[in-house]
Length: 236
Image (cartoon, rainbow, N blue to C red):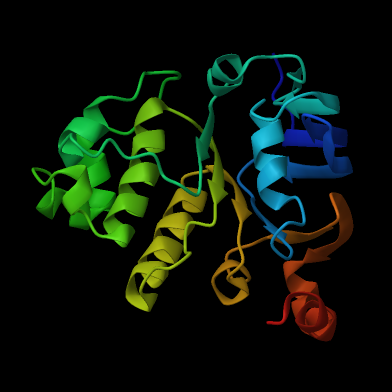
């Protein structure tokens, strides 16, 4: 089967939480090996977009294709089996387990999942804290652990929600380096971020989400000319 250049294609995506209509026809694509960022104010629909891609909202309509396969009617575990890894803002670390036990838990969903040794090379902080309980890890260490667990599964497309939020600048910088390493290894990344200064240098393209719709697309080379617009929209 020939691989699609658009690893992820979202077309006319609507999503609902109960009676609440949260996405109003989202359209964008993410190409293989790209880092794409969804920008927007809180409540604009960025996190709901990630959740709708994974099938974690209520009713959804439109089209979500992963490597050419339509998944709009699929359950979340089936979408994950196509190599889609979701890192939610709340991280979901098992508090009673050690760092390493958390890393040994994720199921194998596709070939190419990173070994424990590869994880510790990419995240040396986790090697130092491998015997520490989840509750004893700092916020930054928990975020690294949440990302590392996805990489263990073999996922090749990563949906990352607000990974820099509330973290020390040195940790944010390290997370940026990790995203660059993953891109160099041909991972495909869809990043929801409030921190424009963190996200902008990493992104090949950015989509601004407003009121559950894509307001505009900005390529990396257009950043300077669109900076005033972004400043007005996001307060950056």
